[in-house]
Length: 195
Image 1: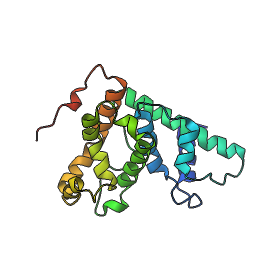
Image 2 (image 1 turned 180 degrees about the vertical axis):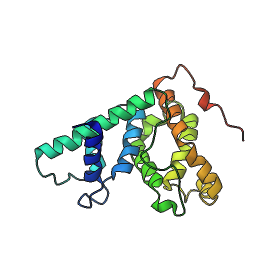
Image 3 (image 1 turned 180 degrees about the horizontal axis):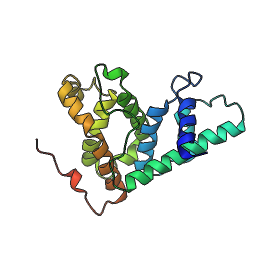
């Protein structure tokens, strides 16, 4: 079975209604795996797989469980390779908050990404807290998880600014990956943008 076919099956499994309500769907899982690919400290597969599902799914048999888990591990490796290639990562959804941000796929992706960050939150901010915070900002805005906090509520209520932030996600991902994985070279993306 090709990787594309495996992903189609994985997507059908993750998007099914049978999973625990806190389990991540395919798009959120992609964000989550992207965060794990960037994370400066590897998280054991068993730990992140269990966290992704919130509680063990009801697999039809061991073969299905192995197929789902191995496809997740392969997808994470695939995302890591794309980030390492220094190309902007193509997300599995439109990078657009749309008319109703809470219903947008990019919101789900960003929430998944932040779930991945929360697994090792201390490690993310250990060395370059200001830079990491700045690079995570577009994803934090996209997630909507922080809208109640004073420094985010202004952005959340300014749709043009929020959309502009969300548009920066692919390059922020590349910059975060380089920051953690090639710290001796500061990528040009980290220089402040002047509008």
